[in-house]
Length: 346
Image (cartoon, rainbow, N blue to C red):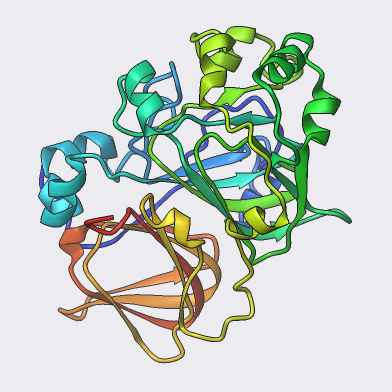
């Protein structure tokens, strides 16, 4: 099963979740008039996913045209899908998961383990550092939450979790107003939540390790909050330090007004984990060979290969580009988010 030498347009892939959302994904994909929308369009669309939901394999895995799992296809031909440099650095993992995430309600306060913690407790090479690219908002005060405003003791956090004191946990976080085009890097360990009405493209390491402080009204089961580790162990992965405005500024960028055809969207701290560029080709734009996920957020354009083959793309499309597709050219009045694994050597 060799990797194709052409980009592939992928359908929606939305495993069942515990929270509401999905209308913004349906609107982006132009599916509002279809039966069962937005119910069929859940709050998360896992794009080109080789990652299964925690404890729910194969839910979350993407299938290629004809039915095979992308995970199996990549393992069968990692060089074709990923390229030699990537395979030498990261093996047969894509090292990336991309999601469309539409928060139809506020998400719970939670955090993710880093690579070392994930290796010790989940036998995984990857933890779950992530980043958000805000592509839409609704409501008067769209907000995300990141980092504790004051340093906390382990005893204090354990008490909040034991009592499920949700208002106090949320109030302890920095409330960060966001607008379309803003980006936020979320390092592993950082407590965070996404507010109702915030629609993001999320890049993350390819795992589903979410440790949920505020589990009662969302998960209904304490064990799902700590993923079977027990909170005494899980809380060792939590960043309890204080994040003031100066520290938070290192995680945030506001590149919406940047005029360049290629704009690096994420804060520098995200580069060892993934890359994201906004592409707006005024003239045809060359894209170097790379495994990539392309999310078309606005307009219409064309991808073209060196042999003259062309693929039309439009708002709401999600494209998977194998390394074997080689150099491509992007043209048209289109805005595309190009999401990629970390560069070799990161």
